[in-house]
Structures are given as C-alpha cells and as structure tokens.
Length: 328
Image (cartoon, rainbow, N blue to C red; front, side, top):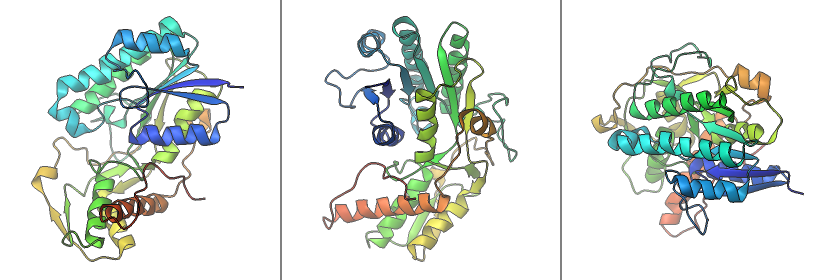
C-alpha cells in the first residue's frame, strides 16, 4: 500500500534524476509524481502558472512536495535576472500557496542554496544562524524564496528548508566546474582535444558533496516523521572546504594525462567568495543525515561518466545517462 505521494518539481534535472532513482529504488511504498515541463506529464505545468499548479496539487493530493525546480546556474540567473526572480520566487510562492490550499497537511521540502549566505561565508563553517547576505542574483533569489517560505510557516505551511552546498556527481552539466574539468579531460583522453585545461579562478575553496548524499536528505524530510516549521532549516554540507585547484589535480591524476592549465578570463566570476564551507551538525543531529560517498569515488564516477559520453559520441559504446548508484 502506498504510504507516500511525493510531488517533485525539477525531476528531469541533475538532482531530480538522482532523487527519483533513490525514491524508486529504496523507498518502497512511495508514489512519485513529477511536476513540470519535460518531466513525463501529459499536461506539462510551468510552476509560474498558478492555475496549473493548483490543478496538479488538487489532483495529486501529495503527502510531500520536494521543490527542486529553479534557474539553478548563477550564470543563467545573471544573464536573465527577471526570469530567475520569476521562477525562483514567484514559482515557489505558487507551489507553497497551492499546498496550503489543497493539501495543508503535506510537507513542503524547499531546496534553497548556500549561495544565499553570500558574504557570510568564510573559512569557518557557517551554521543556519548566519545572516543571508547574497552577492549574486542567483543567491538573492534563493535567499528571498527561503525567507518567504520561512514566513509562510507561521501561516501554517509545513515546510522544511534546506541550504545545500555545492554538489557534484555523474550526469551533472558541464556548466558546473567539476563536470567541466572532467568533460575537458575526457576530450583529451579521447584524442579530440589538445592537452590544455581551460579554467577560471581555481584558488577558491568550496564545500562539495556527492548528489547521491544530498538527495537522501530530501527523501528523509519527505518520508520520515520529523518536525516541520519555521525553525526547520538545515545546511547540507561536508564541513570540509576543497580548493578548486586540488579537485582539478585529482581529476587529472586519475586520468593519467599531462596537461597545461590555462586561465580563461571569460570563466572568471565577479563577486566570488574566497572560501565557502558549511556546518551540517543540525541535519546530522535532527535528521540523522550524514554524507557517505567518498570524494574520490565522486571524482572517479564523474570522470567515467564523461569518458562514456566521449566514447558514445564516437559511436564506440552506447551512452549511459542519469546518475549511477554509488558503489559500496
């Protein structure tokens, strides 16, 4: 018998695919309903369409809604700021209001971002008490949505808010730095590219997690009997900053190739925080969540994914898509 009816926005994205694979593989009794354009629905719904969202929530009657859909790349938000505000804030409001109207007992699992902390980030792990001080458009939209959902909890929304730090894994777009490095290295290994890696600022340090660990936190929040409300906000982080340069070195080392590192001005981002690391002790304590996938495995899986993509482009092997289960 189905015990959970989980509505998921952004199910066709990198994180969404990992979440669906987890829910469908390890959570017996979960019925999952993707909501959104390009997510397998006969009637694709844009989360900016309040009436469409209302119809879906009323029809599905979810026990939980995991909200992943967003303009998620900082570069995309920077190039189309009005669109980013509309999707990330108005779309989030539409979902939350529909849940309060038509499924008031359901949990709203809101996926925010560590980018909301902005200037509060430093070499000292930030807790959930750190002020939200975004320094880019993406971070500002995620901070605004986070605060909005927190306020709506006082009106009865049963929300759990997450602020995940950088996550990586096989299947991620090369818009993101680790996937970009692996993609470039795979091109070199295949003989299609010269042994040159084009990079931006590789001296900054970030807190990286495997996406397969990240989505476990969302599944826990959606399916287990934990508190929901204004105080239920959680960092999802490893607590260990890693220099981008060290990650690049790890990928190159695993590949066995000799490369030249070349800085490209167009890859440099404005307003970059030098170090960003999070304290996830609250999630460990209250949700019994902790990361399990070793960083070295994440790097190996990402590089293998891009090698498969390169081989598939040659027609030598069939492509593999999506996020593979972590090897134990």
